[in-house]
Image 1 (tube, helix red, strand yellow):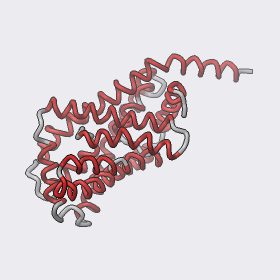
Image 2 (cartoon, helix red, strand yellow; image 1 turned 30 degrees about the vertical axis):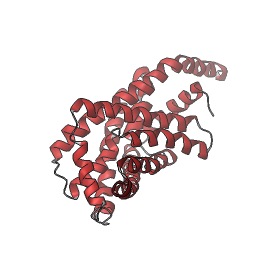
Image 3 (cartoon, helix red, strand yellow; image 1 turned 90 degrees about the vertical axis):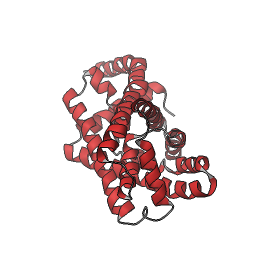
Image 4 (cartoon, helix red, strand yellow; image 1 turned 90 degrees about the horizontal axis):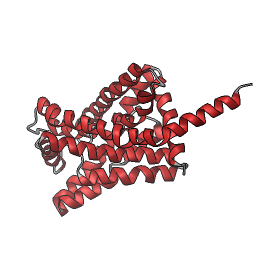
Length: 270
């Protein structure tokens, strides 16, 4: 297990590789991240709907929370570009100016849109055309979930977005700190299970849940989807990743990281 300072150094390097990758690679990895999260959501709803009907909503949320992390684990192991994790990764580059700031912001925006593209692919090609969600009780459950997610106040949804990405970025941080595969899986699984079981709001996961619900007849318009959920959730996700993990880590470890990097450069000089 890496120390927090070592984990911060790893995060800086991961961010550099992600941001400076060619644009087509960034876009492809963003699409794949959206696909993985949507597939995790599909697995979760398959269980949640059945448990919801048979044993009550609480048990359904627990079971869904237990299996949903599959998507985030895939993101970690494949290096895919997930918007919510990237909200944490970009902090050092933005605050230090170590990478072109315009490119960093463009990378973050691109990850959101390509994540949406990946979710839409799974929403339509697998969930809908594959007829996973048209059958009962899944169809009714998806309609109720979509309607429920756009029914809260803007502030409530925003705060739930903060809770979700605080835990998601904690999962990403713990994966960076872990040295072996099993440790990385466990490091991701516990926080992601927590945010799912608690009913927090994740902007990328909601691209799957709400759009799929709309496809099977949820009384939700695209404007409601965006303004009542995606906008406040995305802002809450960004704030949590940027401040609660990114800025805190930057304030805690960046000075030590910069000093160590400078020492290494001096040692390398002839």
